[in-house]
Image (tube, rainbow, N blue to C red):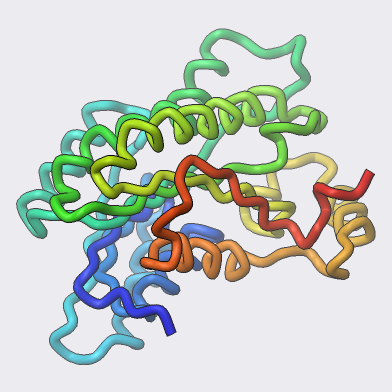
Length: 254
């Protein structure tokens, strides 16, 4: 069992899908969690209720932090609350994501800025604000996807933003390793979450991915959360600047 008692974690986009699974998993390991969300207040409240139902009395309730992580002023406000409420931080999971799904020739500069700010800049900004609170070392994790290294229809900007996130993580890892802060990325395979509903070819994507996955099934949010739990533990002490692919073997199939 991995014990994270006494640790404090911020999970962005933590009310649904992969982020929700990570928040629940870290909480079950004893971690105090702050859940960032942007629009869906009902979803974050339901996640908080589930966390509280599994925690012992007096262990504390999760912090619910509304912020658009693509906006610097929102990140500043979020960390002001964290500093006031907790004073320290041990774990950051940069999971919140957005993006424009269009053919390459239809993309605009606005689409570029929106997607890159939320999916790439946010990891950098979160790290810059979190590090001063990581007084005894820490863990920073970004959630990426196979679109960072594979061409997927309509995924141009999201794929580019994920590739940029992975590069940012490698550079952060070099600078932060001496401070005993691990920075790594989890690249998730195809996961059937709400985000996938925006893909026009969703059913085809799910079917093809399931057929081509050597492990015989699609991965779940919990598969990603379990990897995040490992990376948040002392067991990952010497893992720095890596992108760990969690996809049931899909990426190794030609």
